[in-house]
Image (cartoon, rainbow, N blue to C red; front, side, top):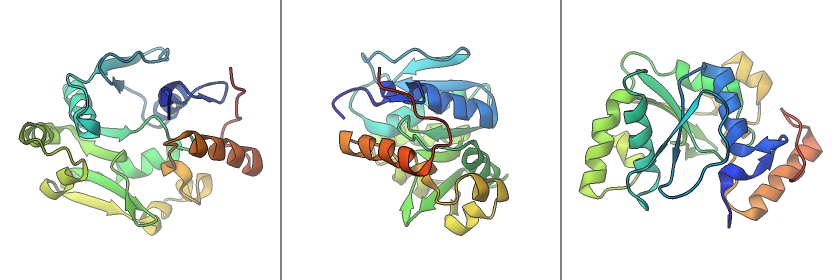
Length: 203
């Protein structure tokens, strides 16, 4: 992206602030942000805690393990997402969490044929498995799915929830912005289709 995705402007605030607001609306707390070591985060909403990855350059699996470990004492389950999901809906978060039944460790959306491990729900009990993979040098986030009980949620399963079908029928909740072109396209889409929340001005 060339700049911090968390600090990109959206809805008059930052993408990070919007994501925190959606999660607070969907599940309450505790809310935790995992940041890269040595990189400053934009201002966090009240009640949101931040922790830093202990090691740089180990990808999202390191962030997942760090975050799950940090909330394990307060929660048995966690919804885990990237900060760059400008269309994320609270109904999507609730639907994914609802699939995390007693025998399920990971509720994994699969949208348009692509698994979405950074818009998924995890049991915090999988933390040691994630840490063991990191210790072996296996940084593949989806590799963790091979070691746990997974509920895969395709489009039909996700949209079987009436609230999600009404709020996000195209399942844009998993659309991320990886580069300036994708960010610009997301802003144009909001202007054309109408946002779930009003788009803010750059500042």
